[in-house]
Amino acid sequence: MRWETQRLEKAKQIIKMYPQKRSALGPLLYLAQDKDGYISNESIVEISSLVGITEVQVQSVASFYSMYKQEPTGKYLLSVCKSISCEISNSSEVIESVKEFTGLSNNETDDQNLFTYESVECIGACGGAPAVQVNYETIEGLTPDKAIDLCSWLKETEPKVIVADELQEKFGGVKSFDWAIEDNTGTSSPVPGFQTYDTLKEKK
Image (cartoon, rainbow, N blue to C red; front, side, top):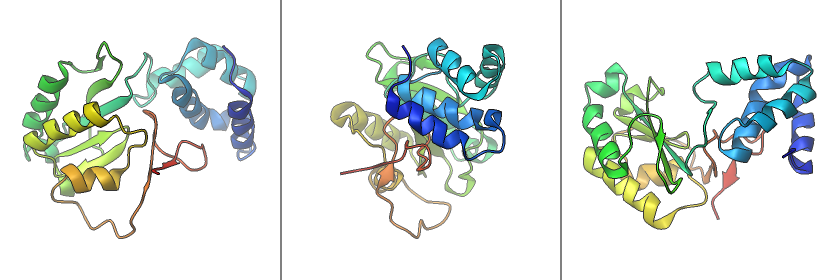
């Protein structure tokens, strides 16, 4: 299925921001993932046409970076950091809590397409370890029990927009530093929230 008119127009606006069309490939892959929850073959064809490179070239970039998903992703992508700062702060127990609640192993999605689980390398929140992201919105200082509370809350309430400030207040602990500016924006799909790409949403 071809991209809808609004997504095509946004793609064209993004392409104009770059001196060469192909330089917009990364952002366009996020638009594709926002549409389908992963990089579909149809989107690869669309992007290839938009930026003037081959489908193989598009696929090679999409498959190289782990944030571009090759298979359908659940509504909530749970990314638990396993790097050294988080590991020495008990991330292994957070990982086990999330895996036990969801019944998932690494890079698996449940039958309801609600959760996808992945263990990841450093997400840049070492001072607030252990850290977890939901659709790339970060929570710092998460305990194993709070990880279960987080998953339960997501399952029961199914929030349309995931906002880091809300998650931190409900489930987080020690932060790397104070988040000085209150932020009520987040993401509504397993894609980082970027204002320029229209993947940043405001929680009503």
